[in-house]
Image (cartoon, rainbow, N blue to C red; front, side):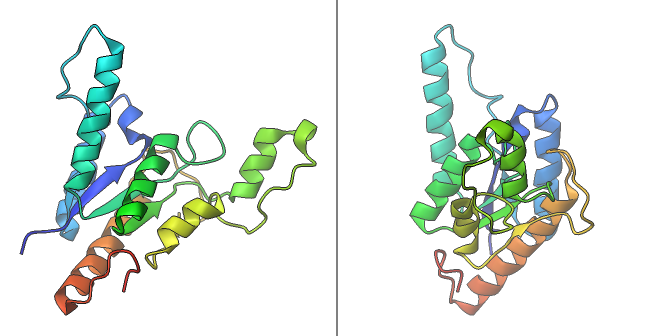
Length: 193
């Protein structure tokens, strides 16, 4: 049987060593029985027209998502209190398609604490979700809709966006969940049954 294909979403694509980093994630996926597919753009031809380039990347990434069975999303806060905006669009795409969503964050701090720090004293009167969740409730709900938590560091110590131990735990759980459900013939991608 062919291994399930996992779309490896996240801000990792912006790392200076993105290709090498993605190769490490792909190898971890292979070791746990998944086929990892990172949305790198090293094969996109450079163009003088920036508008053409971003559209090419967008279309390529959507086509790649179409070929994938699940998403494993790096939801580590990026550029603010929450996960990378592009990654969240990809998570929403998988949710809309009823495909399983797996997510992890290398941050241990809850969303409310990060938002309060980002907003500062001037906006302290704003009501912020106080649910002790790793991110905005809609993000957590999307991942949870399939019955999976957002994986976080077990030791309570934050890591950079490029750390791979929490990714490995998430990928292992994803592989086990997908293998268990497909072998029983009861795989319902949206509900996670």
